[in-house]
Each structure stands twice: as C-alpha cells, then as structure tokens.
Length: 272
Image (tube, rainbow, N blue to C red; front, side, top):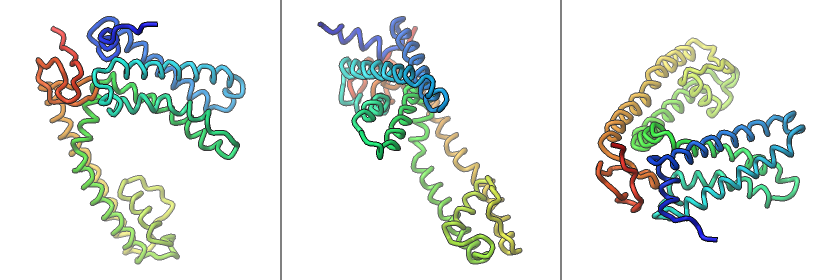
C-alpha cells in the first residue's frame, strides 16, 4: 500500500488555506470535543456502570484515530524532529500515550496510577490550542513574561513567609498558628484575598498585621495583570508584523516568507 503524497498530506494537515485543510481541522476539533465528552462521562460512576463497555470502545476508537493523526503528522512533516519536540508535537503524543500505558500496568495496586493515566487524556483538549491563534499569542506572551513573573512570585514568596512568620510569633499556637508553614498558608490565603476564615488572628497586633496583609493583597493582584497585559499588547503588535511557523510555532518571519527559518517547514501563505 502506497502512502499519499507527503506534500498533499502536509497541505491538508498542517495548512488551513485549502478547503480540505479546513475540513480536516473542523473534523479534528469535533473529534477532540467528543473524546473529552467520553472522558467526562466515564468519570460518572452511574454512567460508567451502565455504559462502560460503549465508553471503553469509543475511547479506543478515539485513541486509534489520534494515533493515526500523530503518525501522519510525523510522516509528512518537513522537519520531523522539530515537530516531535515542539509544544504541539508533545501534546499530540500525550493525547494517545495514557490509553496504551494503562494496558501495560497490571495489578490492583496500580489502580490509582491507571486512574491518573486515564485522567491525563484531558491533555487532548490542549490540541485545540493549535486552532486558536489567540491562544498562541497568549502562550507566547506568558513565555516572554516568564522572568518578570518569576521575580513577582519570588517577591510574593518572601512576603508570605515574612507575614506568616510574624503572625506565628504574635499569635502563637493557642490561636491556631501552630507552625510557620500553617502561618504561611494563612498569609497566602489572606494576601490573595481568598479569606477562608479557618485561621484568624485574635490579638490586636495580629489583626493590624492582617489588615496590612489584606491591603497589600489588592495591590499585588494588579502586578501580574499589568506585566501580562503589557507583554500581550507587544505580542499582538508582533502578530501583525510577523508570522509564525505552523509546525514549530516560532515567529519572526517576514510576510513574504515561504519556509520557516528555524525548522525549514513550509509557511502558510496569507490569503489575498
């Protein structure tokens, strides 16, 4: 049996500018959503007890379909290693591995692991991100902001440790602050404005510190929002100026680029 021409497969699977490519994308999106629906139904014990056999059959059907899709993507990719190592290549692999791995893990003691592997099939929903350009822009914005966000969370960790330690000293075990980790938990809940109320300061000094922590929490919430919003705005401007490769998702290509300068894959040509 001879496989179809690689260029034709590539145009249909990786491209969206042809009618066949658009039909393939729509069919794949519907298949992903149906597989997620099967996974959700399988987690309901009453439904599983009555329709477990049908759900299992459908799950294997979806798994075989996604396995075939992954194999064809690797086959027709112009740079196979770049696709396999890319974000979407890893997600495509994660979408099929759990079902196969669950078969090779026998024994009742591994039931929890099998359950975990079954839940990991929810990664299939990440495959939908390939078809949402806005999601790609958001992912790149988060990636570009990673250092600033890391600095923010490092500062936040220092603050919650400081306030937690202060409340541990001021309140003590008699008021529920039995250890520094418990006190840090209180600080995290307070500074994020969640406020479960399971641990509350009782002394005037502790309540004063808690008030400062709460007020600081409102100011801190705006920091990551501003960081991400600024980077998102820059990324959206780049989106208008540059194009991204459909295989490795790297940007910085000129508008008239035909091939990706990173992986060599063919670029989608803008419609006239």
